[in-house]
Image 1 (cartoon, rainbow, N blue to C red):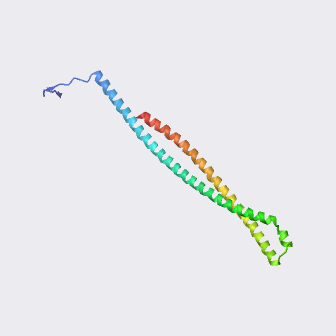
Image 2 (image 1 turned 90 degrees about the horizontal axis):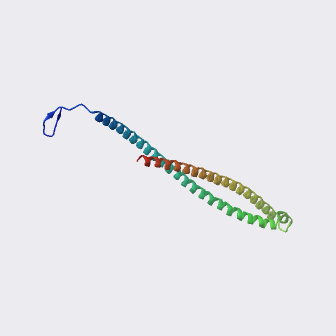
Image 3 (image 1 turned 30 degrees about the vertical axis):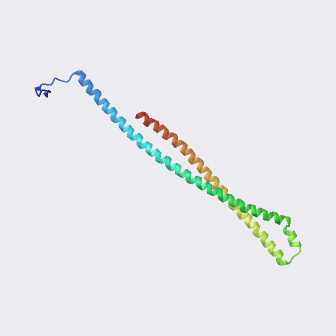
Length: 170
Protein backbone atom coordinates (compact mmCIF):
# COMPACT_ATOMS: atom_id res chain seq x y z
CA UNK A 1 0.00 0.00 0.00
CA UNK A 2 1.07 3.55 -0.68
CA UNK A 3 -0.30 7.01 -0.20
CA UNK A 4 -0.90 9.09 -3.32
CA UNK A 5 -0.80 12.88 -3.58
CA UNK A 6 -4.44 13.17 -2.78
CA UNK A 7 -3.97 11.34 0.49
CA UNK A 8 -5.70 8.19 -0.68
CA UNK A 9 -4.37 4.77 0.02
CA UNK A 10 -3.84 2.57 -2.97
CA UNK A 11 -2.36 -0.83 -3.51
CA UNK A 12 1.14 -1.00 -4.98
CA UNK A 13 1.77 -3.15 -7.92
CA UNK A 14 4.64 -5.66 -7.84
CA UNK A 15 7.95 -4.32 -9.22
CA UNK A 16 8.27 -4.61 -12.94
CA UNK A 17 11.17 -6.25 -14.72
CA UNK A 18 12.45 -2.84 -15.68
CA UNK A 19 12.30 -1.69 -12.05
CA UNK A 20 14.14 -4.83 -10.92
CA UNK A 21 16.78 -4.29 -13.62
CA UNK A 22 17.22 -0.63 -12.56
CA UNK A 23 17.60 -1.69 -8.93
CA UNK A 24 20.36 -4.13 -9.97
CA UNK A 25 22.14 -1.45 -12.01
CA UNK A 26 21.80 0.93 -9.06
CA UNK A 27 23.48 -1.61 -6.75
CA UNK A 28 26.28 -2.23 -9.28
CA UNK A 29 26.93 1.50 -9.62
CA UNK A 30 26.96 1.92 -5.85
CA UNK A 31 29.50 -0.92 -5.58
CA UNK A 32 31.66 0.64 -8.32
CA UNK A 33 31.50 4.03 -6.64
CA UNK A 34 32.58 2.46 -3.35
CA UNK A 35 35.45 0.65 -5.10
CA UNK A 36 36.58 3.90 -6.75
CA UNK A 37 36.32 5.75 -3.45
CA UNK A 38 38.50 3.13 -1.74
CA UNK A 39 41.02 3.26 -4.59
CA UNK A 40 41.13 7.07 -4.37
CA UNK A 41 41.79 6.86 -0.63
CA UNK A 42 44.53 4.27 -1.16
CA UNK A 43 46.21 6.21 -3.96
CA UNK A 44 46.00 9.49 -2.05
CA UNK A 45 47.66 7.88 0.97
CA UNK A 46 50.34 6.38 -1.27
CA UNK A 47 50.92 9.75 -2.93
CA UNK A 48 51.29 11.45 0.45
CA UNK A 49 53.80 8.83 1.56
CA UNK A 50 55.78 9.38 -1.63
CA UNK A 51 55.73 13.13 -1.05
CA UNK A 52 57.20 12.59 2.41
CA UNK A 53 59.89 10.31 0.95
CA UNK A 54 60.74 12.91 -1.68
CA UNK A 55 61.03 15.59 0.99
CA UNK A 56 63.30 13.34 3.06
CA UNK A 57 65.56 12.65 0.07
CA UNK A 58 65.66 16.34 -0.84
CA UNK A 59 66.62 17.23 2.75
CA UNK A 60 69.41 14.62 2.82
CA UNK A 61 70.63 15.83 -0.55
CA UNK A 62 70.74 19.45 0.63
CA UNK A 63 72.69 18.40 3.75
CA UNK A 64 75.12 16.36 1.65
CA UNK A 65 75.70 19.23 -0.75
CA UNK A 66 76.40 21.52 2.23
CA UNK A 67 78.82 18.91 3.62
CA UNK A 68 80.56 18.63 0.25
CA UNK A 69 81.00 22.40 0.07
CA UNK A 70 82.50 22.41 3.57
CA UNK A 71 84.86 19.60 2.61
CA UNK A 72 85.92 21.47 -0.51
CA UNK A 73 86.71 24.51 1.64
CA UNK A 74 88.85 22.31 3.92
CA UNK A 75 90.65 20.98 0.85
CA UNK A 76 91.35 24.54 -0.26
CA UNK A 77 92.80 25.28 3.20
CA UNK A 78 95.01 22.20 2.98
CA UNK A 79 96.05 23.25 -0.49
CA UNK A 80 97.13 26.67 0.77
CA UNK A 81 99.05 25.06 3.61
CA UNK A 82 100.79 22.67 1.24
CA UNK A 83 101.60 25.52 -1.12
CA UNK A 84 103.37 27.39 1.70
CA UNK A 85 105.19 24.23 2.63
CA UNK A 86 106.24 23.64 -0.96
CA UNK A 87 107.64 27.16 -1.17
CA UNK A 88 109.63 26.54 2.02
CA UNK A 89 110.97 23.27 0.63
CA UNK A 90 111.96 24.98 -2.62
CA UNK A 91 113.97 27.48 -0.61
CA UNK A 92 115.64 24.59 1.22
CA UNK A 93 116.38 22.95 -2.11
CA UNK A 94 118.28 26.02 -3.20
CA UNK A 95 120.45 25.58 -0.14
CA UNK A 96 120.38 21.84 0.57
CA UNK A 97 121.13 20.42 4.03
CA UNK A 98 124.57 19.30 2.91
CA UNK A 99 125.42 22.92 2.12
CA UNK A 100 124.10 23.94 5.52
CA UNK A 101 126.19 21.29 7.28
CA UNK A 102 129.36 22.05 5.36
CA UNK A 103 128.75 25.78 5.10
CA UNK A 104 129.81 28.47 7.49
CA UNK A 105 128.11 28.59 10.85
CA UNK A 106 128.25 27.06 14.24
CA UNK A 107 127.33 23.53 15.23
CA UNK A 108 124.19 24.92 16.89
CA UNK A 109 123.09 26.49 13.59
CA UNK A 110 123.66 23.18 11.86
CA UNK A 111 121.65 21.32 14.51
CA UNK A 112 118.83 23.87 14.22
CA UNK A 113 118.79 23.47 10.45
CA UNK A 114 118.64 19.69 10.78
CA UNK A 115 115.75 19.96 13.25
CA UNK A 116 113.90 22.37 10.96
CA UNK A 117 114.38 20.02 8.04
CA UNK A 118 113.16 17.05 10.07
CA UNK A 119 110.14 19.07 11.19
CA UNK A 120 109.38 20.11 7.61
CA UNK A 121 109.49 16.50 6.41
CA UNK A 122 107.13 15.44 9.21
CA UNK A 123 104.76 18.29 8.35
CA UNK A 124 104.79 17.33 4.67
CA UNK A 125 104.02 13.74 5.55
CA UNK A 126 101.21 14.71 7.92
CA UNK A 127 99.76 17.21 5.45
CA UNK A 128 99.85 14.56 2.73
CA UNK A 129 97.98 12.11 4.96
CA UNK A 130 95.41 14.74 5.90
CA UNK A 131 94.97 15.64 2.25
CA UNK A 132 94.47 11.99 1.29
CA UNK A 133 91.84 11.53 4.03
CA UNK A 134 90.04 14.71 3.01
CA UNK A 135 90.07 13.78 -0.67
CA UNK A 136 88.67 10.33 0.16
CA UNK A 137 86.00 11.86 2.37
CA UNK A 138 84.98 14.36 -0.31
CA UNK A 139 84.87 11.61 -2.95
CA UNK A 140 82.64 9.49 -0.69
CA UNK A 141 80.33 12.45 -0.14
CA UNK A 142 80.17 12.98 -3.91
CA UNK A 143 79.24 9.30 -4.45
CA UNK A 144 76.54 9.57 -1.79
CA UNK A 145 75.18 12.71 -3.46
CA UNK A 146 75.02 10.92 -6.80
CA UNK A 147 73.20 7.98 -5.19
CA UNK A 148 70.70 10.31 -3.52
CA UNK A 149 70.16 12.19 -6.79
CA UNK A 150 69.38 8.88 -8.51
CA UNK A 151 66.98 7.97 -5.68
CA UNK A 152 65.33 11.35 -6.10
CA UNK A 153 64.94 10.84 -9.87
CA UNK A 154 63.40 7.41 -9.36
CA UNK A 155 61.05 8.53 -6.60
CA UNK A 156 59.99 11.54 -8.67
CA UNK A 157 59.14 9.27 -11.60
CA UNK A 158 57.10 6.97 -9.36
CA UNK A 159 55.40 9.97 -7.76
CA UNK A 160 54.46 11.44 -11.16
CA UNK A 161 53.07 8.12 -12.31
CA UNK A 162 51.00 7.83 -9.13
CA UNK A 163 49.78 11.41 -9.60
CA UNK A 164 48.65 10.59 -13.15
CA UNK A 165 46.79 7.52 -11.95
CA UNK A 166 45.14 9.54 -9.19
CA UNK A 167 44.11 12.25 -11.68
CA UNK A 168 42.71 9.56 -14.01
CA UNK A 169 40.49 8.33 -11.20
CA UNK A 170 39.16 11.83 -10.60
